[in-house]
Amino acid sequence: MDRRLLAVSTWLTVLVIGVSPPSRAASSTAARLDALAIATTGSLQEMRASEIVKHDRVETAIATCMRAAGHRYNKRPVLSFYRDFTEADFGYGTGHATVIDSLTEGPRILILNETAYARLARESADEPAVPPQDATALDKCRRKAGRRTYYQVEMPPGLDRVGLAFGELLMAVNRDPDIVRGMRHYRSCMHNRYGYVVDDRRDFMITSRLDRRDAPVDGAPASAAWRQAVAELERRFAADADCRRPAYEAGLRVIAELIDDWEARHRGEIAAVRAQWQQRTDDAARVRR
Image (cartoon, rainbow, N blue to C red; front, side, top):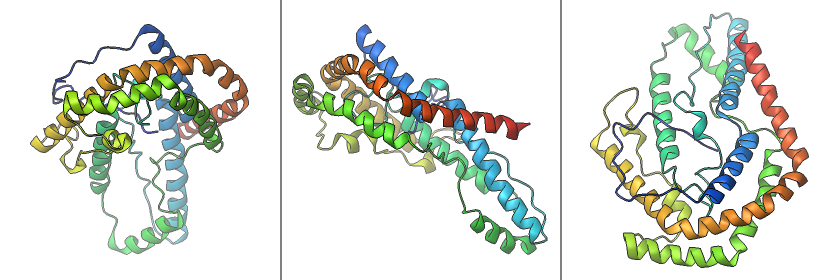
């Protein structure tokens, strides 16, 4: 999953629609979901560790190949996708387009993603060119290494089984009569209160309207197009939070009733995934040394 935050407070448009926090009971259950998501899909530290390990593997393979071909090669530095992220940007939160996505996080994950991709594209373009006599060999060695992008973190094997199992909880949420009623209210609320016609909520919420070519990278001023796109995303997320609140609160009540039993039944699978994340953290520490 993808979770990120940039220092955007200076250029984000202020929300037009106020979003009040969820109830205390809902907040407590949401925190448990966040902890579960971080335990399985990774924390900020674990994502960065994965980048370091994968970078070392790819760059070592390229350097070995270049030496064998009689060429010098200086390993590229790690360009972290997660450079501007904080631990608070990880968890269940947003990005799933489910009834129980956060009411308060807004579109910051979308903003962070597009900004990070824009920064990496620029930083990659700024890498020093290799001498012409090395270019062909380098291209062959990169192909041999699989042209893998190290910042595209590979999820641990077994995580798909945890994800499928988590679908049990989401199915229970989606079948609950209170949630069904809440989501019927949702579409009329979005249309009547905010003027939005929502046919496919995933497309409406998750498909980014941001053009990363406009992203304000490393202190560059945000373009008018970027500011307008951010403002529209903020309006959509705030409207969604307002209209989804009844279904959200009902959904977290369902989760609260089921999550203890679910975690107990899947403790072994979760522990296996945790062990793999820990291994990556340990491996990254060795690479740094």
